[in-house]
Image 1 (spheres, one colour):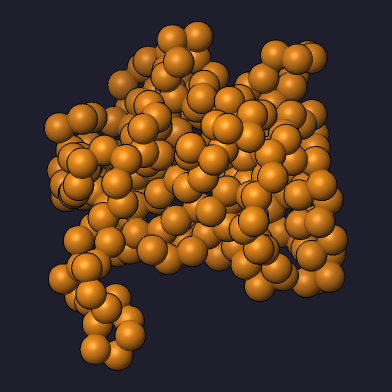
Image 2 (image 1 turned 60 degrees about the vertical axis):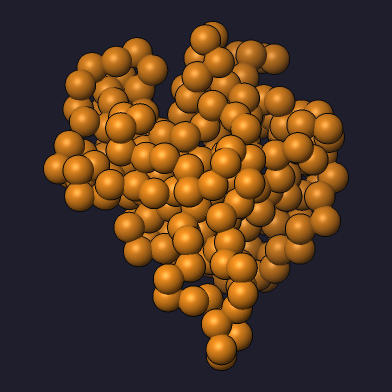
Length: 218
């Protein structure tokens, strides 16, 4: 779907306003991270949530949400069958990412496509070169400020979507940060929203590699 999206600036550089708005907010005409033809994308993919983009990596793909967590394992965003599948949000998550933890899944392809590069976050150097993933929706640009990445079991609490209390959520944040393969200065707290990127890993049967990021409006 490369025809739907182009970077607003040269690769690896974030598109940000040169000067702040008079009230200190973001100017209405501030450039966006990516220039995406959402009208064309939504025609082709009614399940579209947005576009996920990590500069200087292969991650620049549409993000969808299906009625279950199996369809997009073998279908592209436009519904065509393809072994690469598509990046998709857990069917139980709220589309507006208001849950404490929003899950995004993608295959670990031998070709290096989709989410194969997530396992590279096991190294500090890779994290420092790619500390932010961008989520572009029709309405807003978001940053995923990555703060933890590690190998997990398929039934790990990394996949919890919601929590009974802020205290329980805060304790979860402490646990996942303590497992991380890399160190990050990103601060997270009980009022934040987390997006978790997940792919297969092969260190043991049914292993997964997960990367957690704090969702902030860009």
